[in-house]
Amino acid sequence: MRSIISLTREVYHCYMREDGSLYERAIGSIAKRNLSKDKDDFLRRYIDLIMNTKIISDTTKLYITSTLPSVASVIKQHNLTLAEHEQINIKTAQSKIDYDGKKLLKYFPDDMLSKVIGSSCDLGQYNKMLNLAISDYKTKDKLLDNILLTLPRVPVQDTLSDEELHDFIQIISPFIKKHRRYVEENLPEKAVGYLYFLTSNPSLSGKHKEHYSLIKQILE
Image (tube, rainbow, N blue to C red; front, side):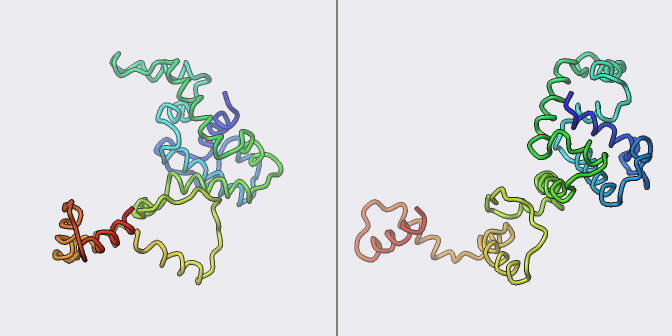
């Protein structure tokens, strides 16, 4: 079992109730460590990401929320009241948990939680990692889905000047879904009809041929 999965269980039970709400203060083993507010905030954000997004599977969440000692015991307990076709295979569950562990390692080092819970760590770097995971799995109202561009994978930045933000908005504005809908609803029908003529006529000449060449340069 990867350390990050094992310690995620500990963080869950110290911070989150069964109904998914967070305790006002950590309980259990983490409460005894008297963590700084920054570390406490980090762990709250981390467990919220884990439990309230699809960064890990429901099977792994089932294991994390249980207090039973092993994957097998968790799955056996879970299967007790289920019909046979609804039951989870223990080997399948273990594979999913292993897969989710590898998935988390794409964002976080395996020893991250032990260092955060321990004495000292580079919390600034870990926050950048967490912000990246949140941006991938928990963007507010999925706002980024409204951008028709494939955004590059870059490190999360926590500063940007007003001028830089304005320039960025100007760049992406034509590629926002709302803008596309507006353009689609207001395209001049005559021009669209002429475009169909140019692209469907195999024997263009004169101005028509020039216009087709211009359209081709833009669209290719």
